[in-house]
Image (cartoon, rainbow, N blue to C red; front, side, top):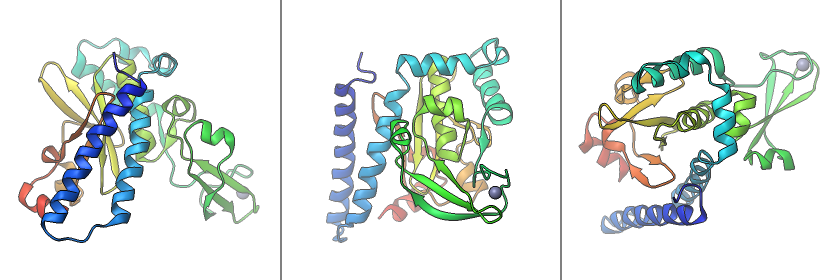
Length: 257
Ligand SMILES: [Zn+2]
């Protein structure tokens, strides 16, 4: 079993290197100058998400995740019903959205001034929050910190964030419940989950923020997004899933170049 091992992480990196090499080859063939910044962003995202998907298989993470799931999700008749019940509960009862945190002193959430990124503490780093946002309350001048946790285990406790935290916690819950699930990263800045549905014999799009089940064209059709890459991360492999999410593959290819 490769799950969560350094060997598995190495294997993932190998997939990634192949994907990156292929992309650079494409660019070179078209005589497009190499964009170092874009390359570094690819590299950074890859590192972050690889670590994230590895932790879903750690025993403690799975046990804690299972412990928060309510009976109405456990007591469903089949896999499709369970995922839908999980999506509904997760969105309406479990997780909350945070654009800006509430002031830790007066509780106000509408009078906060962003200070950008502030220094993470050792505790933040321990839970995968290398990025910490700071907000100063205009009323009481107190600074409230918003650590962006990557640890799914920690998210079972904090239960809040933006789409990154939502998708991270939701994917962890799917895996804890015994489903085969993976994290899908959209390079135009969104994250969601895919679950392998036995009955359909295919990967199914699940967006816990909305929530949405099996509506992969929502982003381009509904939100008017122009997707470039969507990459699925699991503890086994890295897969380019873009085709499932785009209306027109030809236009998508042009956007990538
Ligand atoms: Zn305040």
